[in-house]
Length: 233
Image (tube, rainbow, N blue to C red):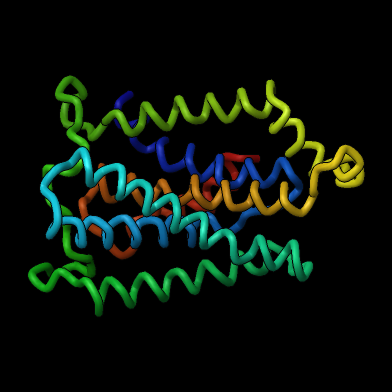
């Protein structure tokens, strides 16, 4: 059960990363690239902070925030192209996935490599910054991170079902003209939803760094971003 929850964590996040923009009528096929950039930002932030502080209470939130921001910024690119120029988000996000592979590979192999390892991976963050698995799970790396993700999924569900924001997002996808008629910008709702999806996808990178490995390992993602499409549907 514990391992199932661990394996489910990145799928829940990428599922949400696709589902949130999908509610407004957009297909986020770029979750894979967004989580790659989130992981790179997370590990690079951790490496920089290791020379500044030893406190995990300071480092962890900043690492998670870096992953969120990186995923959001990477999603902002196809979102603004969609809203301002009408570029199809499926095409731009697929192309940006390959850009993310290139950028992260270059950074890990040439900027922050672990020269003591035979594997293509980055330098590691301090081990005591990583989330400690619960002892009763019999060596399965189940932590509070996975529990928080499940709670977050419940909150997103509640937002869509019970709040004006969720209604606005759905209305923006089903009838943009109706959204405009009540004074809400369809373009802004689309942009915000897509960026939010990217931020959630970036959290997979924080999960990889703070829970699984402590470093960026090339190929760490088992195509989580693409599996998230099936999860969302």
